[in-house]
Image (cartoon, rainbow, N blue to C red; front, side, top):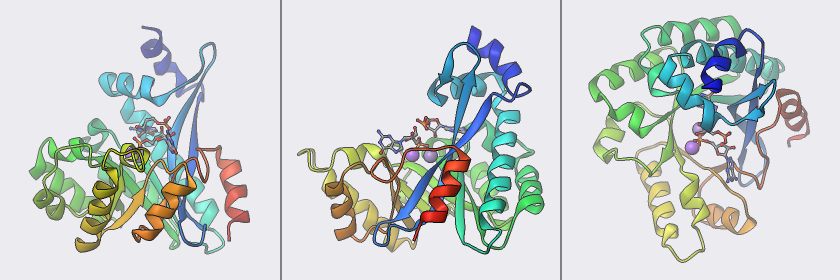
Length: 253
Ligand code: G
Ligand code: G
Ligand code: MN
Ligand code: NA
């Protein structure tokens, strides 16, 4: 398969780029953070979506060196963006294989020690299925990450099977409401009740909450009315190259 063969060389050839999607305060429109999202500029196929190559990278183990590059890149750029004391949260996605890699904690620690600033909050996004695979091991890794000062977000929340009890047992800081629920708002599928319940759950567990995939003003207005403070989605911005994110940041209130 060409993707697998080409992936092996892509890191050396510098074909990856980390894009950033702004995360904003719904009430002030201030940029409070960004999610790093990988892009692969393939020499002949053009832009290849992570949906296509992350599963292959996961399968082959190439996600480990790739993930190390992502973490280092995110921290390095995060340092640049917070050099003036501006507070910012930079998140990256972790796959299951990366999460269970014994070198993860030290690697994150090294990147933060090398690039960290007092104003930078470095955040890791994990899905429910990643942490539910082996809950005892997951809890141990999560608490070691927390000890390093890493923030932890549960990605795609609402699509998996984690029990509320488990959610409470893990040291997450934030819930990311899956974009399928935001997409279904105002479509007669009852997503309003689900979104309201997740916001209430986050509040009662003392977790931050962010709505993903916000595309319309109507969705934004609903989230504001429900007291959701943070959002991410095409209404604000798609994922953009680092230089462009830097410009958005400079223009942000
Ligand atoms: O931005 P977008 O549509 O292209 O991302 C598609 C999927 O790829 C998302 O589920 C996202 O979490 C995942 N993804 C993007 N970047 C990374 C990354 O750096 N590491 C991992 N493990 N997943 C990523
Ligand atoms: O799985 P994860 O939540 O990490 O993936 C984020 C994905 O969501 C990326 O592929 C990103 O490009 C995509 N995304 C971000 N905002 C929106 C949006 O407003 N609408 C849609 N359809 N996709 C979005
Ligand atoms: Mn994510
Ligand atoms: Na998500």
